[in-house]
Length: 510
Image 1 (tube, rainbow, N blue to C red):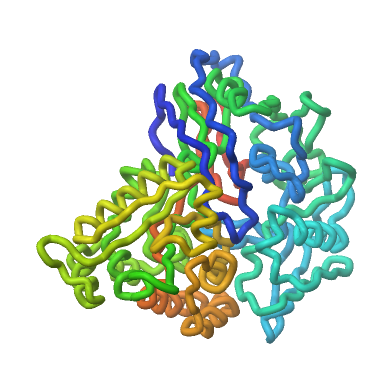
Image 2: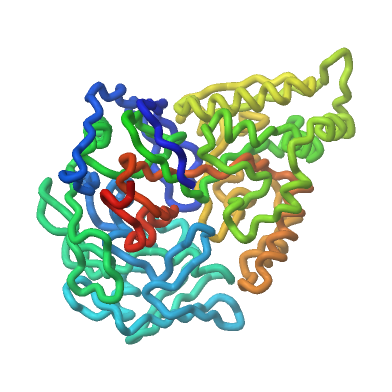
């Protein structure tokens, strides 16, 4: 989604971290946010315009083992995976012609394209694919999503992946970069090649890339190791584009005239509950809380539109999303009051005997605002809500110790939108017993594409009734570009420079 230009807008907030459990996630950040840049905005004459990007020369450029989010945002310009996820999180073949699974659903056979070479001319074969996937299985970034892989093998142009249990949408997890190891900076098959060393790097057109012409022959890179450097480089126009989570951990403050290209992510903001005691062990209370949430106001007023409201554990951009189920779980305070009555918490003299403790990580001003808003909405129904705003360490301790009635959490789900970690895995802090959903979960994970939508509907309908957790929204990330320098951008979560060859860059973009 493209938003209007933001003139002299400052978007700064405290660094924060939600619960990032399904796809690696970032480590907790404790560095205070940088102060607003005081550098003036510089408008460059059209004839001197140069499209440039930022990178961190002090961090690894490896697309699998690297951990710098800045450098990883450039991965899609240099490297490709067996599949790429489009804007609906649907896997599209890139380095392969397709994938097929056996009758058990546990063995996937992937056929590689035979016309692909790395940037040095080395042909792509199964050897590099197997090596890259095995490296990813032990990496910080990809280990969680590939935890269900029990073996990877290959021969010539065929890769065989064995899973510990069936996954009918496994290709959605295979946008892992396939590389040719040549040292600290491996080679890729993408549009561009790393060139230079240290602080003097740039991207140049891949000489062995056939059939697709990038809009630029080269892209200068500017070393911006510190947050202040990144703000200054973008505010002054030295850098043309960058990626930011404007409501997330480490959101920086930018000024000047720029455009914001929002794109959906698998990052879900949700309410979790304690199921082993207290009022929220009653499913009617949990269902009432879900009905009491004005998700549209949360995403619009509190998250500045950088999120999509969702009562389902799946992004509204996904084909698995059900408008029918969503409408059934819309904001309904009257129904919420009825459910609380049914749960044994009737309204008496304007109040209910319902006392709740909501915990939230106070490192994020956005999340604190959401938690306060949720508390106000529940208070309007007569409940008494205490919001405990805790440091990350105290917040995590409260979750692990069950010291809460409900908590505001954040998780980056895998692109197959498997909710298992929230129900039976490491994110089941509330001790929910998912035995009733076990068969539906297994069926959902194993379902092939042809039946996946209906199977997902059945699972989401069951979860709406048991309400083990309450989805609030799915966050957007943003590609920021200097005003009038880019047209036709199509960023995705997996690659902010998705379909870069189709972008218009420079004077023609204005």
